[in-house]
Length: 233
Image (cartoon, one colour):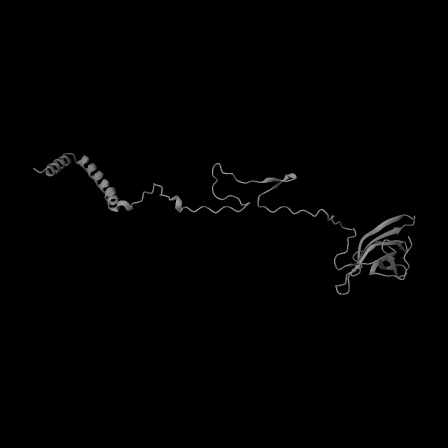
């Protein structure tokens, strides 16, 4: 008898005597065939998802170098050195980050400007030696015009007026005339009290008014010459 026929007959006899074991064996055989047959049919084109793909070092292009001062991107590599902030020279309290702009500092030769003080003339402004004022007597309503040289003091009623600077502009520019003035008041007890220190503007005479119940003064012009003789030192 053919050996294959004899093995099949023995297997059939075994399965007929043990139906439960036969069913289990048949299910296992079907499962093995269902997995093995597609794999054998696919051949070498089957890709193992658990395996790492082959990499060719020659095909890998180097990553671009980061710009100076830029923060590193991606995960940190153990042992890699990351540039951090360093102490600025001559000032250990100030930290400078590579690539960051340096903090702006004021020029050493430029003094800080303060409010209420005379300043040098700006380009286009002309410094004049004479300031012209109007004085008002509020009781009589009389207005008097008088010239005052820079850094000289003229008394109008109970007020003493001292201009420190007087600026205007040439005719080719927009008109703007102003003066830094100090005004003192002489009281009934002959004591002198400062009642005004600041800038007076011809275009806005009421912007900085002098606080006095009887007299008032305001700037009207700045000029180079005056009919009033200059006081002798």
